[in-house]
Length: 271
Image (cartoon, rainbow, N blue to C red; front, side, top):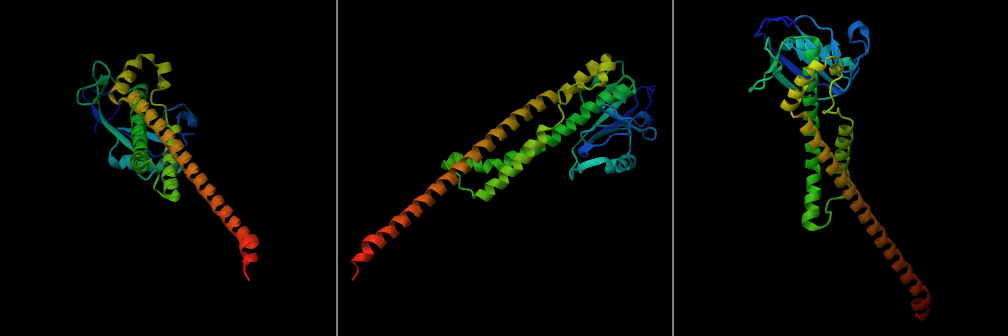
């Protein structure tokens, strides 16, 4: 593997990998001088590796082999809140020394050089794509859990599930809904662009390549649908409980009436 340097020779290629490690990553002290910085924060790594951390649980590693990646991730493990069992990831190939920044027809990212600000823009796009993949999987699972209840309601016009089963399904859906509401905003621009506006075009090209805005909008629509479905199911459960209470009241009243009739009408007629 050739070293990653801002002046690397044309044609130098290396792999970039974004991984979502958990719900949050404490990146205090990781930045230059041990300071906390805005996302993404560059991580000190042995040459030729470059890496960036995001407070919302992502890390992006450039130019590392599997052993180097594993070592770097192990050092970050104590900083992770609620680590995930199945980390979502986004992997791509980067080629340096091109005349302009962009993405070729095969999805290879082409950069003029490996300046830290360029890698930071790439890291932002890859991390957000991996985060969207994780959120898409959560939402798909939530939809799968709600679908049987919705299909039953559509076919039979009523809920045939037990309250406990429905509560479990709603609980899983609520968990996915709440965890995704706090997700990273995929359409937001990285803060590095404030100091390097010349990289706007690269950011726009990467955003289009990974369909960040479109995928974010699709998640918004699915989250809204799940929220409406949850409210509908909860309303139906409450209505069913209300009917059950009314039936219980009717039965109790009937018992009371029967007991009164027995005490005051039927019993006095017995010899």
